Image (cartoon, rainbow, N blue to C red; front, side, top):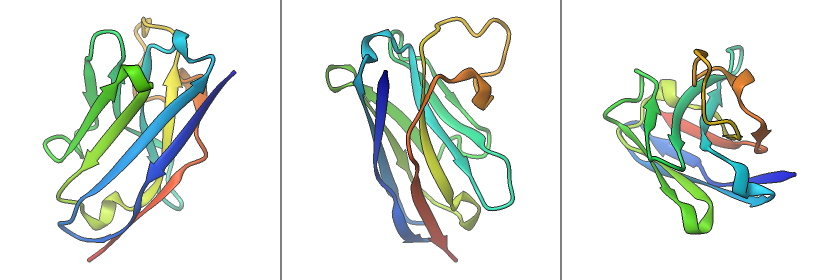
Length: 128
């Protein structure tokens, strides 16, 4: 079993920055991808950014490209999401996710059905 523990989040004004971290513990050596999803009230959960722990390949939602950066620390089994130039529409509950399989088999990285493990979530609030 894998546990994902998130930290960071909080409240910031528009244009500000926040940093989220997610640490994997337990049976984590099989994890190939880790990343972040978010869900705003009344909306579906959406993929934000994911990184391949083996190759460092990154995937971003179009809405966060050039503002968010995902990075990894394999020694600590941790991924970090640096969020800059935050907008009110970035406000949501952010969830860490992890996937064991390397191949996507033609499916999308941004589908939450493709992930095996989830964290409890951390709130991000952005005021205008």
